[in-house]
Amino acid sequence: MPTTGSNALIEMLSNSGPVAIAVLVVLALASIYSWTLIFSKMSGFSKATKQSRRFLRIFRKATRLQEIASTTSDYQPSPLALVFDEVYEAYKRQTGGYGPPRNITPLERAAQTACSEALTRLELRLTWLATIASTSTFIGLFGTVMGVVDAFHGLGTAGTATLRAVAPGISEALITTAAGIFVAVPAGIAYNQFTARLRVFASGVDDFARELLNSLEEIPQRAPAPPASPRAPEQRFPEREV
Image (cartoon, rainbow, N blue to C red; front, side):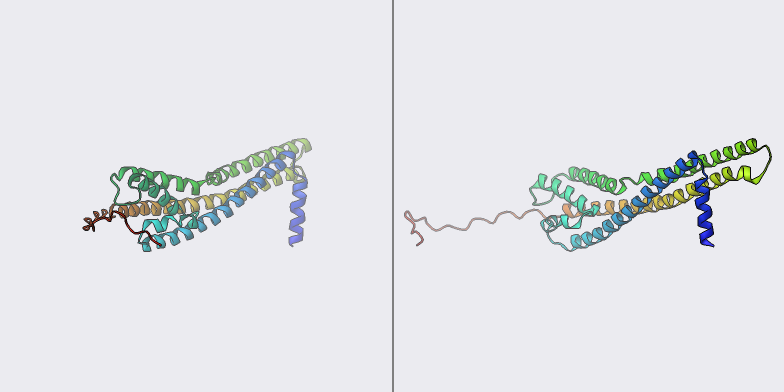
């Protein structure tokens, strides 16, 4: 019955030594932080994906870059909006916002920097999941080893190979092993999933940067000013408006 199992688990924890308790506390803290990161990243990636799709639709429908530049703040935390802001600022510094860029190299550098910054924001604290996934099993294994040591110590103290002598140490070993696996598996799965999504984002950001640079290069030259029409002879004393 569940009640019996719960009571047995509580009894095993109450009989655990200080080393096992310390291991379980560390694993519990790691699990809490891991799940906090997982939910935070899920929300962040979902928002970035949604806003990037919206921004890309607006970008492809717009006829003037100025129209897009005035609305990029509405599409945060889209990495595409960040790339557009950086490239457009570099474009304005070079051309004043009119005509094709004279030199595309500074814009390419701005695009590369913006892409790297956008992906770094998405990747922030993600390595903690990999760290938790790789170390939790070893922390649990440490508790396992100490539990086995306690089991042999109890066996030596009792002088006879009885279940009562080795049970506390074995239970400590099993609990810490299970706890380490419980913490490591979700963190490892989440890290791999988020890393795969980061690769998709990186590909999408690079494609958008190339599309943006191509759009800037295709901007037509400003038409030359039309010749001045013949002016009427100036009046020496023009009439004033009433």
